[in-house]
Length: 144
Image 1 (cartoon, one colour):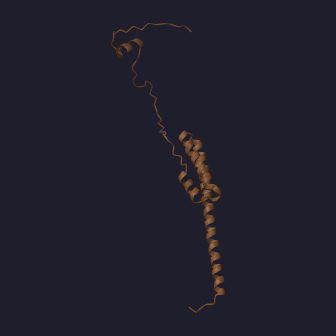
Image 2: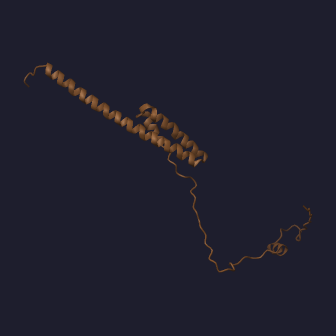
Image 3: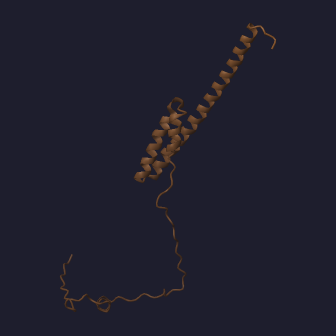
């Protein structure tokens, strides 16, 4: 490796070098249109700054507070928070994985909780009908 030292002396004392001087010293040529007849094609890809990854935090919070069947809502909330953290860090793939798990847990919690509510309504209604029938058989009708 050779070390060549060159001294650059300014041609204009105190003034910045002009464009013409630099052009002449270094042999800069002006570029015009391409010399070949090939068509130049460009491709522009618009990358969004932030990919929208739904983290389902609100849904998970709702399931945690109201429909927390076997703590599925709470677990979904934990995965939703992890998804939001991954999204803030910039890990889109990790955020999507956690969001997908939170979505599945939210759907499961919603379905199980709705089934539980429907079963409770059926049990209460059949029990109340049975109790009403039992009382109506014991009490004599007064003829109203």
